[in-house]
Structures are given as structure tokens and as C-alpha cells.
Length: 221
Image (cartoon, rainbow, N blue to C red; front, side):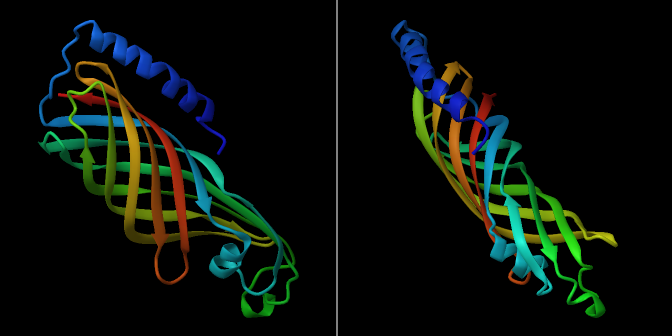
């Protein structure tokens, strides 16, 4: 992954010392109201290989396929707490861009296939999610969480060969699951470092997944 490894390491090293120092000095971390907002950046790695490109977008004429499956994304959302350990979350996730290229021999051009030459795909995945978050009590200065739910996504972009260009869009609704750590930076604010796995499978033309490493800021009300 290209984004956040250094930031993640620095956060994991520095924040525990800061949080424990604040806690030991008598700063009271109490459970807050049952609503919060969150958002942040992520590094995304798609599980999308040359064989997936040929399956989803090929016409039997492609070779020398190259995939760029590492990118950057973002997310934001809102959570509603039902208890000190359980919340409902909803929001938006942009997993970032996915690009691929290959070379067509033009053997299928008479069947409305690709013209001979380079073929490029440039797309991204985004959508909305709804799920449950199980976590240690928010009044603790450090904690852990697990989250799971459904992600309604759209995989959309452009496909271009040497003679024409067109847009495509594939949609689906699939599960996601994640785990992470939480570090309190104020009475009502946290930094979260988390890993999430998103399934992206429309049962017809797309069968892939995405893994993200995220850093989110959480503000509780």
C-alpha cells in the first residue's frame, strides 16, 4: 500500500503515550452521548488481477495485461450508539481508482471486440454503507472495535481501445468487515486506525474485493 504506513506507525507509537499521560493526570474520559461523526483517509489495495480483467472486460484477444491495484480513498459517516459497546453506522466510502491496460490482437474486432492495439480501463469504486460497530466503552482512553455490515457500491469508469471509448457501470451490494484500534485525544474525540475488507461481487461480471488501511477522526456529541 502506498499511503499511511508511516502515518500509521507514528500514530501507534505516539498516541498511547499521550493518552496514558492525559489519563494519569486525572482527565476524566466518560461515556458520551449516543451519536458521533467520523471521517478520514485510507490506503486501498484491490484484489484484482490480470485474469479478473480478462474475465470482466476481455473479449479473448487481450494479452500483456498490467494492473495498478493500489490507490487512495476516503470515507465519512455517522454513528448512533445503542449501548456503551454497540453502535449503528452509516456513511459513504470511496475506495479509490483502479486502472488496467492490455494489448489486443484485434482477433475479435468483427464480433464487436477490441481493435488491435492498447486497451485501457480507468475506473473507481464508491458507495454507501450500513452496519454495526462493536467496541470497548468510549470512556476508556484506548480501545478496540470490530465493524461489519453491507456496502452498496458502484464500479464505474471508462474503457478505451485505439478506435473508440465508452463508459461502463457495475453495481452491487455486498458485505464488509473490519477491525481497529481507538485512541482518545480529548473527552469527545478519538483517532481510529483500522483495517477493512470489502467484497465486490455482482454475480455476473465482477468478482473482486478491496482491503483498506484507514486513519479516521471521530467526534462524539
